[in-house]
Amino acid sequence: MTARTGCSNLGRVTIQGRRGADERPEAAAPGQPEQADGDTASESAGNGLIVRLFGSRAFFRLWLAMFASATGDWLGFLAIADLAARLGGDSSGALAVGFVFMARMLPGLLFGAVVGVVVDRFDRKRVMVVCDLGRAMVLLSLPFVDSVAGLIVASLVLELLTLAWQPAKEASVPNLVPQSRLATANSLSIAAGYGTFPLAAALFAVLAKFGESMQGSVASALRFGQEGSLGFYVDAATFVVSALLIWGLTLPPRPQRSSARGAGPLRSVTTAWTDLKEGWSFIATNPVVRAVNVGLATGLVGGGMLVPLGKIFIDRVLHAGSAGFGLFLTVLGVGVAVGVLGVSVLQARLPKAKVFAGVVVTSGICLFAATSTSSLTPAAVLIFGLGSCAGAAYVLGFTLLHENVDDELRGRIFSALNTLVRLCLVSAFAVGPFLTQVLDQLSVRLFTDSRIELFGARVFVPGVRLTMWLAASIMVTAGLLAARSIGWGRRADRTGRSGRSGRSGRSGSTGRPEDGAAVEPAAVAGMARSAATGEAPAGATGGAR
Image (cartoon, rainbow, N blue to C red; front, top):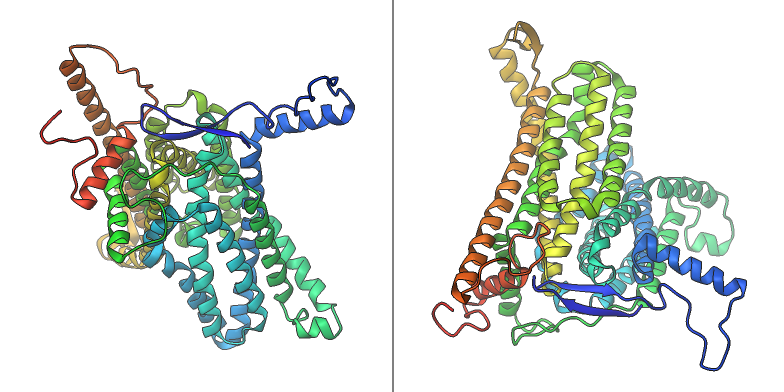
């Protein structure tokens, strides 16, 4: 793919694909007639379709790598859970599974932000290739792991490599597609990330049956017959395929860092710490980036409680049993798909920052209303609304980060978001059931039969309903905080433009397109870097300009 780097007056680094080999067949050599055969026409049509769907052939190649990598992730998830249960035995299998997946969560909480510094310092294509090959090597060793401790260590290494791969991928997306196609690119990324689970589950079942029938010395040496082992080999192959696809990817040159440190290997702990502070300072000072982090991460504290408490709510309040829980999960998934698709179709007409804050608030309202009803059908409709808003918020949030963060900071910003999301989800999973138990006991003590009078009706308020109402309130609050952050940014932006116009003796607009971005990213990045290093911003000569 041929690309050019265009720095807008917003300070963004936006890579726009230009018309070329991605959109039309190569021109005939001088003096030779144009080729008009069926093969050339078919190739041209194929290229045009790929560009229309994916934005560029380069992003299509990255998407194929994402598809292969996500399939491997889900396949590994199932195979590792199966292996942990088998190693733990009948008496402690569940405990072994819990410890293994705790090991998958810890690296993100402890090292997620630090990994972002590495991603921003090294060549991102090489980071992704090394992580894919590293994950393949770890998976090839898992058929020979015979202890829960060994599986925990392997899970830690796998998660560290995944932590580096994800922000490197996210930071590369804006360099491969035009800015106008970022929402579509993020929708396709979600499809690759989560739509591959059914494929991986079916593949795991087929491989388990196939492995049982394999015989011979080679199969015995490689433990093909061991339950789940064949899945690890296929999982490793998916990461090798991903590495090969990414290795053939052409990414544009990284923009030069404005500081003397430059992109390259980490030179000292002090440099790494400065880079880390620079990223967090940018999150704190850029209103749009701050709004996305508050909206997505804090909102997940509320939404995450639906996972451990959904079945309890359906059993105790709706009395719908496992069938009702299955319906909830189905409409939630369909709602997410509708939300993702809707943003992709309407992206050109959406004020992204406003809509992002709005859908976060609306998702909380849907959850509150769904858990206030005592009938399955209206609850299912409202859960569908929750899923639609959640899918839209995910796509819009990532798109806003892609549009408002310079290339040199993207790795740290996405790593920080991943860390916040994991922290909030773990908190929700851990606190939700405990809080439900506490509120349940409180409801029994304060209200007769755990029922209260509201508008002449007796309402059942067990602990699970009170907890879900609290979760919904957290989501609404997160959306309002995001909206407030965006509003502050707009006021600061208008004040800054007014001041610049007054100093220059001109009135009116600066000519900057208004697309929901509140503050110029490059300017905010400069302020963040100054806060992190203690140096004056570039171009400052002392005093106000």
